[in-house]
Length: 367
Image 1 (tube, rainbow, N blue to C red):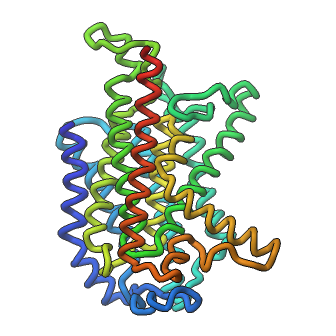
Image 2: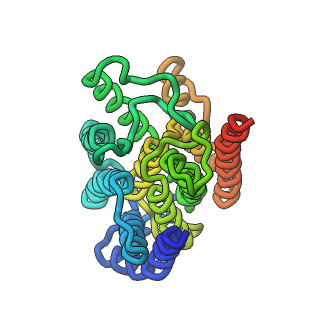
Image 3: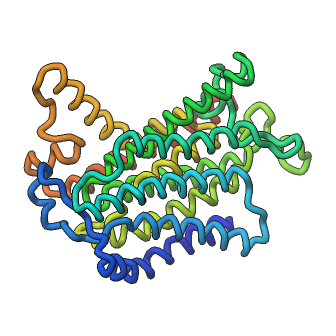
């Protein structure tokens, strides 16, 4: 618990207190947001607002994690470091994309192929290490089985080690690419993506803590009363909770400055990093499919783009006034703050539903 409080508290305070300094620095560096001409006209007032604030969130998360381990004299774990690697790696891809947009003064940064290749490279390294590296007889960070709340019967291991690794890499890439781009598409209004991400990250603080208290490694210890049939076969759940606490704290502190009217934007640097970290937490806590529920708002917004593009290609007509979904409501006359608050409510409801499913599975299994 102390590690969680130190990690989340430091990350929160760091972003709260240092963000004004970075806003001034980014102004001097002329790292201002470029606004698309085909977007809502009200967004043109945001032109020049500093972007790439996600770099500060990443720094706060890393420093919070480091400080928590120094304070508790507790070794970092491979699982925690893997999630941080995923966050930093995708953040770097987003940073390159943001930097090209700024330097070229247009809304197009990295080419789609280059961006996907960068995301894929980071995802492949994460997947290989997560599935292949262990410490003696300890669990590997990831499992070759597709998971919902625990591993399901869909296990790639039955197809042989090489095929299992290839399929797991493909599955991890889909999750990481989908989640990081889902958060990226949601980041279209002041505070929308950051607020929703705080809720999902906090859910993983609770999930990691619960899994730590009900871990299968404790079931073999007589001093701890853990039912072997109900325990969670997850490696390093407590450290994953610490990473989630850092993520929640850093994003919450950023939200203070990102709320309307935003003083700074996270950019692709932040959105890709946040999405990658959430995907990493889902994979390593064995809650891969549960992330679809926890991050339901990201799914809805992503699907609005898929539906819009697909329907337009087939019929030449549009389902929404504009995609992603939040811009449809803008063009329908909704105030930006109203949209953000209502979408936050939707995000919180999805998180509540996901946590309810997570806990209900344990209760039902205990009966």
